[in-house]
Structure formats: structure tokens, C-alpha cells
Length: 408
Image (tube, rainbow, N blue to C red; front, side, top):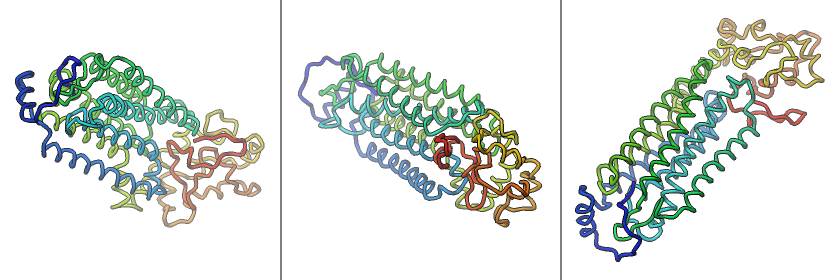
């Protein structure tokens, strides 16, 4: 990640063969200039990112497929964008290109691309897990406002950290060494950057532990544990490489290995987020969606969202408009009483019955069906005519209620 500490005196560039010999003698490493193997590394990593982009495009094209829709594609796409920009920063940080011309602006590429987007990747992932914790553990909605506030926190935190480092002298953080065509990153800067990553992912680990009791329909805890293990492996490799192999960027084997590990780990996180429902939508589309809905019903949406037939419930998912309370009382909408369970689903298949959950039949005859009589968590969450996935981040699924509130 860094070159040796060299004085700030500008020296004329030397030819590439002389550069290798100089690096070998100075740092006692098997130095190698960027060559075709670095180009292959860039091509392979770009291919992996391209495949992941196809995965996301397919997911957006199939956004109405409920198991995919429940995965919060907006935040997942933003995490992917951070991964791409992180990779661009790696081209300079790991010395895969000659650092001349525009590539010689070390602080731009190392600080504002490599470090900044590594942190964005981490903080966005934390927000994604925080949203799950807020919904399932705190019993509060993750609204559009919550999403915007979380995004603002991500931006402010990361911009502040990088801006502070931008204002510190290059000799104490990141500077360009012309004679070596390399970026010199001080040990203090490395330790600080890596320490912040450990703190961020430690906070993520706490959130994942809190998600251990999420209903199995959403399968989020197992995915979260797998993601956390991937990231811990990446952080361990990053710490060892940067702190023990200080001059790894000059060794072709180590720098290419570092870039492969970064890209594979970050791409794997995105595939763990949405890969399984995408796979099922291609090879077992209807059966899996039917099974997903049945499993969701078996888990019990009332338990998952803490909803009952009491219109005076105080949870974020059971609140009703005051002028609708009496109608909802009369309806006595009771999930278990209306048979939304596996036994009911066995007799009323989602794709065989135009109204598999038959909510209207569970209401009193003198109260006409009205979408506004449903608990707010399920209002406008019908997908012609099937019950849509009660998404974890469904602020965008719903029209705004008449009183202007946004709820899950």
C-alpha cells in the first residue's frame, strides 16, 4: 500500500529497469513494475464487477418478484457503487498502473477513492443491518426519512474523516514519490485507517448479533453471519498485508493478491445479499415464491410485525388513523382466525386462487372491504392480488397515508 519514506525533494524519473533495481536494493524485495499480469488482474476484477452489475440489473428488472423486492435493492446498489470506486482507488494504491500524470495524485486516489469508499461500503452495510434491527427488534418503521437521515450520517462521517486527513500535511499521511512512481503512505495513516475499519465492522457485528432471532422467512441472520465472516477475513488479510508487508505494492504477487481479495470479498457480500432469490427466480420462480409466501405466513406476520386485532396498538405497524378505528374494530381482522397459516395455504395456493389470503371474507358482512382498514404495515402492500412481501425497507412500496406519515 505504500512506498518508503523519502524526502520531498523532486527527483527526475528513471527508466523502469533502473527503478526495479533501485527498489530491490532499497527495500530488499522482489520488485516488479506494472506489467501484463497487472493488466490481467484489472481485467479479471472488472469482469467480476461486471457480473455483479448484471445481477443487479436483473434484480431491478424483476423488482416485483417479492423475495427479491424484500432485499432493499437501493442500498445494495449503492454498496455496489462503493465497491466499484473502491476498486478504482486500488489501481493506484496497489500500484497496478504507472503513477504518472493524473494517476500521480496520491491523495485523490488513496484517500478519496480507496479509503473513503471502503468506509462507505462498511457504513452502508451497517445501515442495512440497522434497518433490520429497527424493524424487528425495536418494532419501529424504517421510513424514507430514516433512510435519508442514515444516508446523511454516512456521508458526513466519511467526508469529515477524509477532509481532516486532506488538510493534514502530505508527509504525515499520503504523498507522491516521483523517483519511485509510488505513493508513500505513512504507518500512522495505515494504522488509523485500519483501526477505524475494525471499529465499524465491530459495530456491524453487534447489530448482527441482535438480529439472531429474526423470523426464518427473511433468512437475514444466516446471510448476515456469512457476510460478517467474509469481512473479518478481509480485514485480517488487510491488517497483515499493510502492517507486516509494508512494501507489498512493489511485489507483483502480493499486490495482485491484495486486489483480488478486496474485489472477491466485496463482490461476495453483494451476492450474499441478493444472489439466492435471484437464483430461485431464474430456476424455480413460482414454486419458490409460493414457498416463500407460505413460510412467511407460517412464521406469522402478526408475530413478525407485532400486529394484532387491537386497533389501539401502539406499535409502528398497528397504528390506525383515528377515523378508521371503529371500522377496524368491527372488522376484527385476526390473522390466525382468518387462517393465514400453512394449513390454509395448502388449500388455497397463491397461484391457483385469485385471492389466496381472502382477507375480505374474514370481515363482518356489514363492513365493506377497504384497504385502509388493514394494519398500516399491510396497506397498499397487495400485488394484484397477492399479499406482497412485507419488505424490510418498504417505504418506497407504499403511497403516503392521508396524514402524511411514511411507515414501513
